[in-house]
Length: 243
Image 1 (spheres, rainbow, N blue to C red):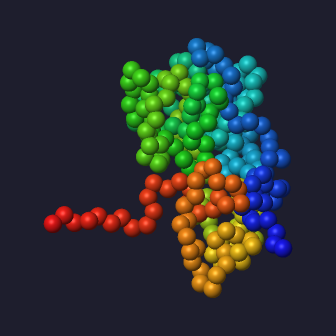
Image 2: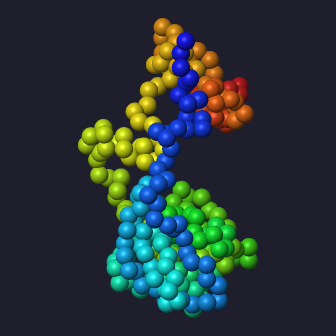
Image 3: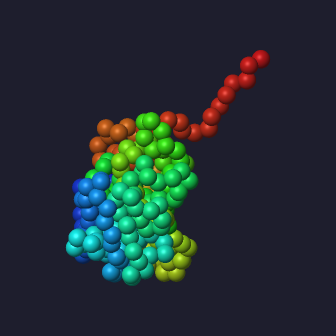
């Protein structure tokens, strides 16, 4: 009798499949100031948080509030930060999108006002303020996607520090395994067609072919949900020529 398939064991996920959640310092988000207030802050430390690829800047504001935000490029201990209404559109400052000029690189963008920043928080990433309109502010993301966001939402000017982290080679399989474990992924992975039938739905047979359609639906149970999930197209596109 075989054991449960890997996709079923990862369904709820045991400790070996979960992203690291212990050792966290604090939520990385903006302090909950009023939109009409203006505050000045100073970076008092730059720290690394477990499971996060970008450094965090520890900021102390003029009213004594401490906040951790992803550090933009050029940040150092002692750097000044302005936040709120009337702040200059300069690097590291935190402003509402309506106050940021078109063509400015921004990061740590709020998706809804007051959430503290949910978008563009990974190392080396940045988005572009594309246009201001009656419906909101249009933001262009690194993927090329455009999104219209409430102009009251806040963002930090600049790009997140830590660019180029993927250029360093792992050199050893153990380093890659630790990296994958920290991100809740399994390494190394074995192809389903290379496994026995009792271990994977694609396994079994003399030849390494699935033998059936590899696409599955979203409502498929965990033990069967392997392959291409609800694809729009599969295989080669064949267009019949009109004669």
